[in-house]
Amino acid sequence: MDQLLKNIRKCTICKDALVNGVNPVLAASANSIIAVIGQAPGSVVHKFGIPWDYQSGKRLREGMGVTTDQFYDSELFAIIPMGFCYPGKGIR
Image (cartoon, rainbow, N blue to C red; front, side, top):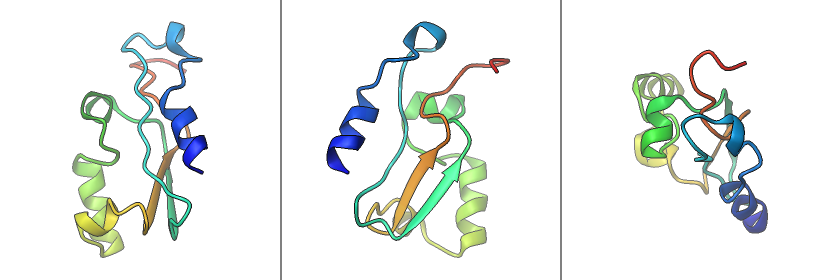
């Protein structure tokens, strides 16, 4: 798992198609108990590199009944987007 995460974080396969550059955003460990799978990161997540760190993430954590510390503990939660990088606006 550690090697997989390293490979994802250094991935540049799509760099020519990403107008805002490469910045894979995810959090996970081999011991994660719950996987939160979402869409590709948005512009705010791309800028700061913290998954689900905006209003939608706040609502998600409230709905799940977990604290921010619990949510970002990779031993508890794996946070994995379907696309690892922000694709930009209007990109399909």
